[in-house]
Image 1 (cartoon, rainbow, N blue to C red):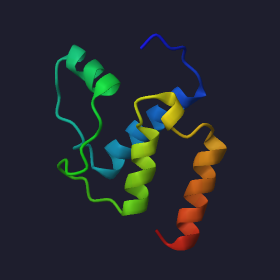
Image 2 (tube, helix red, strand yellow):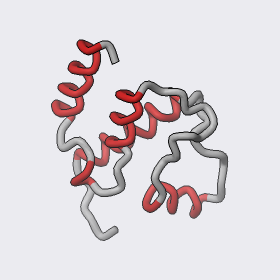
Image 3 (cartoon, rainbow, N blue to C red):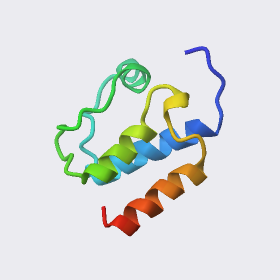
Image 4 (spheres, rainbow, N blue to C red):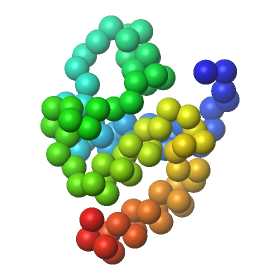
Length: 92
């Protein structure tokens, strides 16, 4: 938890926005502020959450964006773009 903020934090935030959009806002129910913080720090998203109907490729992409440690996320937006482009070319 004692980590500095870098560009990978933006990739995490993008993952939150994508999941919220793709699940039509049903990815998590409203909770007290400290529970939200705990969710972002410690809990992984549950694939079977209400509204989670995503392709395997998109699901994997979002889960990598939402990885809890920055080292497990995409390291750059270019890396995310390359994965997205490849997925689009393969139709997934």
